[in-house]
Image 1: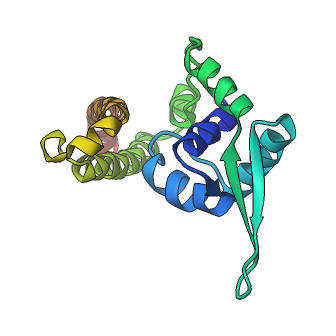
Image 2: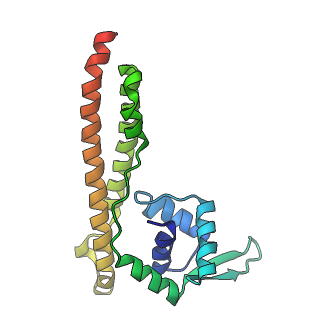
Image 3: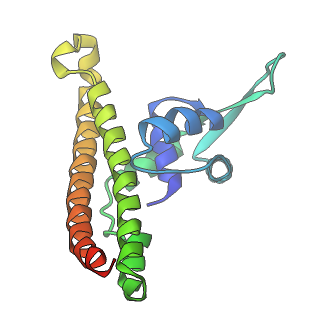
Length: 190
């Protein structure tokens, strides 16, 4: 998957500045799905503009630097829709922790357990962030008839978030099992 399509999807929702994409989207609403730094976002916006998938309008501001507002074009909408309808093969899992564990036989059990505990803490934080997003989502029963048009989008976002939560819970369970497997050995050596 490409950062370009993530940005096209966000711009399909509404026009945004590069800064807005970073702070309102990548730092908040989709942080659990995709991360990007400011430089990556601006490089990708430049490429999308060169491809004709977005346009950029400069908004003059007198008390601050000018703002560049990006809008999805028809070509960008078509490319994004095509991407949405195309099956993409599952990516190769690239998890540094798993590679570290694969080669960790040379480490002490204490060092391995410490590594696993650090990942456990990070995954607990990620799970908490996903659950917080889930708790912020409006209840379907609280939607007005005007809001029902966005119900489908909210349903898709809820499904993705539910998978992320389930994935983190499974990962946490595995980490706890791995720690329990390693710790008795490290305690007997101390």
